[in-house]
Image (cartoon, rainbow, N blue to C red; front, side, top):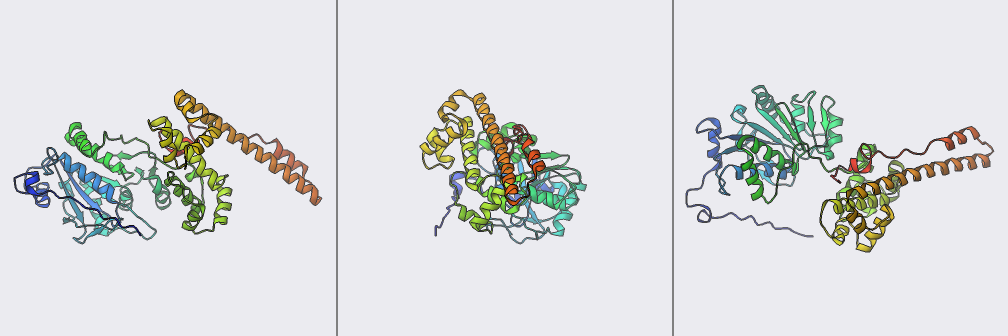
Length: 427
């Protein structure tokens, strides 16, 4: 068993500033009218099992934008952590956060930011939380739902007929639970009136930068991002990375298997482990996977990894050896062989020829896939004819119709193609 010990460094007063340390809780009293109002004031509502990164990304960006350098005084921004009571709220990773105050006067804030996380069929929301959100909406306060925090907004009956951004991972959960919203799973965050919904994860950082830029200006947002060792914020319409084909498969076990494969491209899992995690035997999963997806688990994983390698070639300056490793191949020769078999040329050649040649290679691959499907269809029809002949019950009409069917149409790259469903910015 591996244990991880994380050491958090807290500088002494003398290493930061000779002036007295400021209690952020008391400093936030300015948001309630006891001091000068900050340019940006945010109240955080943490839903039990919230994702820590979504909360910490926004609050740290506010902290850096609020003061000069990294001095962390809440001068331009203020923030508070709100809850129905003052009991600790546990994050999905197990860490606990103490609320600073109970719900009151939402109009003190420019934004109420609701951070969600893990959900299951029995997830419920505290009545006081929903009441507070409705009160905030009635008073014209902007409300942001981050990760599955958007679900709380829907539960509060605030999102009817509105666009609601959600992570691709929770897209199906949102659709199955709520039918009166417009789900969006191909953007980082969406603004619809006074409501903002965000996919979560690192997209929360982009949302935080958007809020800071809107209220304090682009300079403060950029300064905070630079201190956090990142270049720039992505726009709201930036695409979420998504796994291909998952939305087209109905069986939840196969969908979970596909997600696991996509999430472990660099370190491919064994089929036995994937099958165990979805509650099936290896043989059962292989059978149902091929039936639903049209290819084996190994073929699906191989296609994902080789296309991921193609994306890395197009979007980075990594060496081909590094691309092969990051794409989950044990050695560069294996990657080169599979790449050549898929696209008809070596990775170095396709990178040198550029994006136009890469698109043509993709189209050739799609056409080959289409032809393969047609060949399989004809072979199946012939097998049916042979079987009928042996049993003495030939059905020439059905076989003729089957053989006369047109080939499987070429996948449209712009709508249903592999790369579009993958949602990665390939070119």
